[in-house]
Length: 167
Image 1 (cartoon, rainbow, N blue to C red):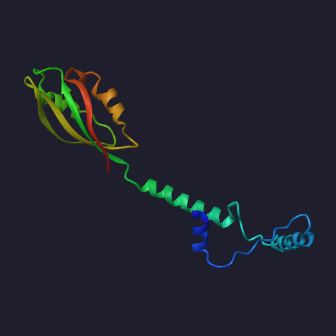
Image 2 (cartoon, rainbow, N blue to C red):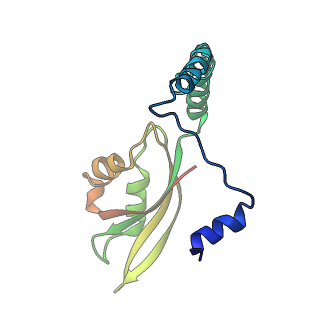
Image 3 (cartoon, rainbow, N blue to C red):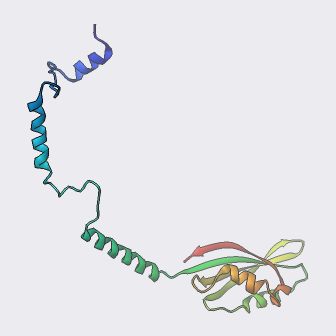
């Protein structure tokens, strides 16, 4: 009676099974033959098993890195920001608030369209678009050092970034 494994093997590999000769204690000449073949294969230095880089590979990698660096420098480096500017209360003059915010001028900063959005209880916030050059203007320093300092802080209670998109 056959086990299921033997039946599986017999069905997959039909024919008579042949034994395998393994070099053992009594077969010294058989062990010498593979050693001679190994000696012939030692001359094959073209096969690089460890993936060492050749000079050509290093030059190609340097060229690719230089191309990527120049491509990054060519990017515009601009961002489009949508910002909410909130007044202190409902009595704050929103026209003066907008004038105060737009009075901040920096290299790489361009103010865009603005609109007043009702918050509640008669209070409105100003939503304003601006475009910045990333290398020249930090949005954090714009808010903390310019919009939250006197005399603008008489009108501005807080600023929130609603959207920040790379151009």
